[in-house]
Image 1: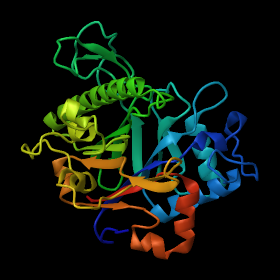
Image 2: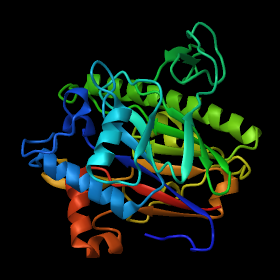
Image 3: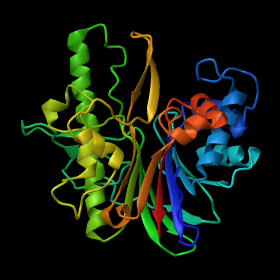
Image 4: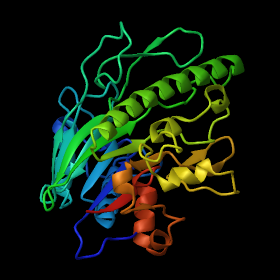
Length: 354
C-alpha cells in the first residue's frame, strides 16, 4: 500500500465495487446500522457498514469510484445515501457525485474529499437515438455499432451509463478526466441448463459488452486527442484471456479500452491487466473473490481496473487491497476481516505524483 513522498503533491484514486451497498439504506437513505441480515451471505447490515468504513479509512483515497453504489429513484438518492454514510462513520470523503441514473438498483458514484478535489459531472457527446452511426454519443443515449462482419449494425445502450467526471486537484490546479465504468455482465442469467441457449446468451452478452467498450474507447481517444489526462476505472466484468468466447471477437473488452500497445502515445496503462496479456504463467492478480457453488470452492479473478493515459502512468503506483495476496492487508487482521466482510470485490488504488 504505497504512498507518495510527503513533499510531492499527490492524489490517490480508487475503484471499489461494494456488493449490494444499496440494501444497507432504508427510505430516504437512512443508514441501516442494525443486526438484520445484509445481502452478503451471513453478514449483518451493521457489520457490513462498519467493514466498508474500515476499508475506506485504510485506503485513505482522495476520490473513490463506488460501483454498486446506493440506488437513485423514488425516495432513494445515491449522493444523499453516500453522504449520510460518510457522516455516520466520520469519513473525510464526505461528499458524493453521481451522473446519469442507472436502469438497475446499482449506481456508479464518486465519494471524495472536498478539501482535496473539486469535481463535477461533465458528460461528453450528444444524445442519439441509434438511427444513425455516430462516434461516441453521450453515454445515456444509443450507440449503433457492428461487432460482427455481416454488415449489420446493432443498437447498444448502457444499463449503467458511465460516470464522466471533471476532477480538479485543489492544491495544484491539475485537471483530470475520469470515466467510471460498470460494464455489462456476461452472466448467463438462468440459461445454464440449456447449453445451446447458454452459448447464444454468452455470445450476445459479450457482443454487447464489447460494443460498450468500443464506445468508451472512442471517448478516450477524443480526450487523448485533446491532450486531456484521462483515467478509466471501474468493474469491467472482464479481462484478457478470461473467456472461451473471446476467440470469436479477437480480444477482450479490457483490451479494447486499453488500446493498441503498438501505439504507446494512445495506449492506457494498467499493469494488473498487462500481466494477463503475457503468456499465462500459472498465476495472475485478482480483485474479486467468489464462492463457486458447483466447485464448492472460492475462486479469484481480476475484474476491476484503473487505466491511465500515458501522461499519468509514469508517475503512478497501483495496488490491490486483496486480503490474502497483499502482504500488508494479510498481516493486518482487522483490515483483512473488513475486506472479506465488506464485499466480494476488493479496492484497486492508484497513487499519482502531481
